[in-house]
Image (cartoon, rainbow, N blue to C red; front, side, top):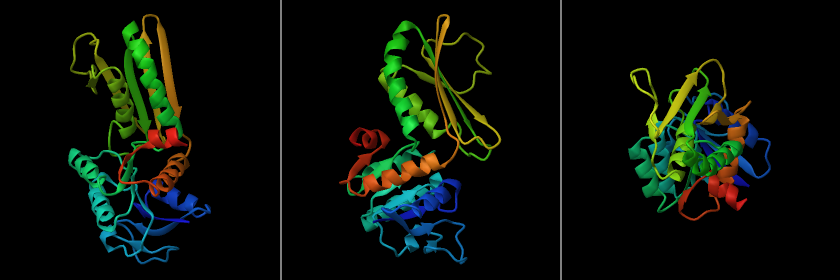
Length: 254
């Protein structure tokens, strides 16, 4: 049975991960880490800082906030523990630290742990190679709950970057056209964020051509989708050699 440390266990995603893990036979939560952790009874040991964690684990899942991720990376290197990073909005400094750490420990990082989103990403890559040459414009719209801190979402950027790479890096990302008093540029890619209510997460890629429109849309009804993906990623990463891994590799090797 794989033992995991959940960083951010008191958050929405962290709570879902712990709940699902409790019903699984091949994984268990060895410890939880959260700045809001207290002495209240828990079914596993809890800590406010991962550096205090004494439990050994087969993998760490970090679903906390971006500023806390470097601590998880440093702990992973210090204890030689594989790490899964579910947190979005990471700085360039954190990404650089993650790449450096992956030389000594396996690190799995994905802006979205959903199988459907990652398949949507792969499909969008294929479509843009055909549709961009046919004069289609590309726009991305994402919707999330009103408590989400980063905008646009990490998943929106994951989709945009995948599309842009597939198109040879020709797109310019545009987030606000309110001050642009001109027609849409050929190489623009609009990325739009909507925040409201309790929307779990919706992403839409729009390919708009001459008198025709193609839309790919993905939505979820529960955070269990992400929690399931994070647990699958932990089981996958725990068996890997040092390096960087993502959901695309997990899917390809399934």
